[in-house]
Length: 308
Ligand code: ADP
Image (cartoon, rainbow, N blue to C red; front, side, top):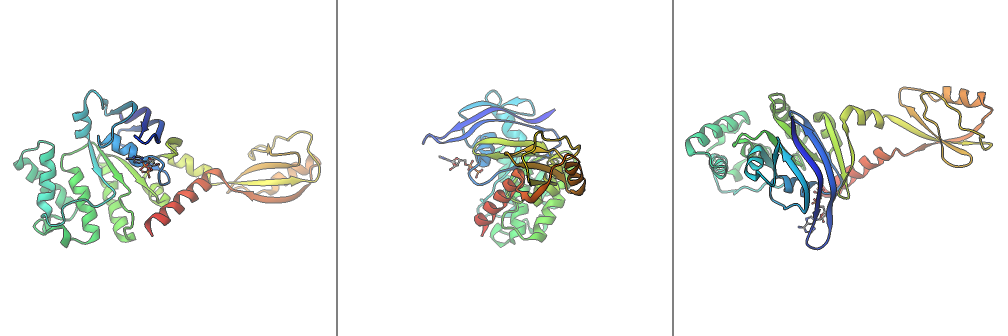
């Protein structure tokens, strides 16, 4: 069963800006999924559409089989959102923040209190239920955001950069909690600027850039691709034909240079031997930036500038 399925999702804002240019995305039920992308890529627009905060221009959204156009209430009920900014009333008591949220979903006060007790206990906040949220530490506020998103018992939890600007200790305790609820069956979609976070938590990943999905794969697959070094070899003489050297993925770049893809666990000497056997002499060797690696560097860089 798919938790989320997006087909040809488009969003053009009133000013004519095409924020989403036909997004296709599938997230399986029970997955821990990373949605990565630099600032302005379209992550918040996508999440906004799923949560009925932004109206789509066209395309199809299905959440656990419910179509957003036909069953908006079912879709809303299925999703819990942890937004990027801490946005509760600082003077409201912790318990009321959670119970009132349940009220928005039509959950009666008695049941809401039971559920609030459960989620606040799980997140280590039950003892603090009667303090106002402004008295909480930064880490506690983050946990309260998660408790509030879970009180109506959604099946899909979406976290929009939950650990932006959060110190490493709090980040790790949030990771532990998210792993735990994912193991218990919660589907989680996480947007983040931190590749390390996505790598640590997520099984599948999509990268969005300029309103388009530029990568959609299993995390180990993507990491395996990242662990390939690309070299540009310059030859003394133009080769007649590019030889087949198994395991090195040779490709012609221009008249006298070749691109070689070398897995990090394999040396390059076998390639030199193979080329020598074809009377090809290498005069220089340099690293070619990996396209995906470059993409990640860009992502992480834009994250840094954003959070400084
Ligand atoms: P991300 O969350 O990946 O940073 P967004 O979804 O916020 O990206 O933005 C995608 C693009 O849409 C950006 O170019 C942004 O400036 C633009 N955008 C976002 N919200 C609006 C809006 N309300 N009106 C016009 N343009 C917007």
